Image (cartoon, rainbow, N blue to C red; front, side):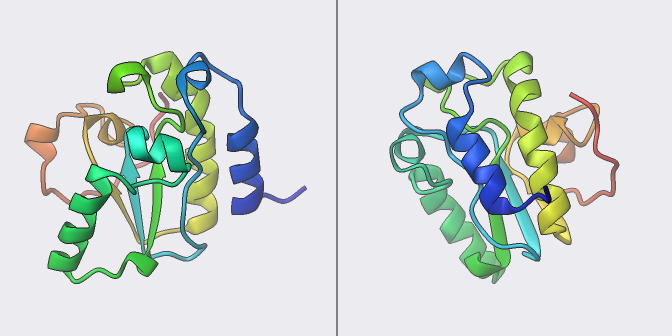
Length: 150
């Protein structure tokens, strides 16, 4: 069976792969289209995303909308996703084993979307693409990389 974004979303909504699902209201699949130029990658859903099952609709999404407008990027040119698809309790940082369970969904989305740019929003998503994962040293830096194992 060939992969599609709809298939991946269905699998995410049914996933029971880690303890995060116990705490989440709803898992949050990615949002956007195949061929989006920009792939925006966050850490995990926040409170509003958890309730609506849509990425970047909460406070972080409102900030993101402002930043995209400043950069002249249309949201329809973006695919929005997170490393983890369920909200961690008390908004804590996802643990490595939780990331390892969710990351396959991300790699499949990336292969389908084929974006020109992946924009990591924070240390957790950055750590998937660089060994340091240190936002302070990488902030605002464009680089080419291979996808790293978790």
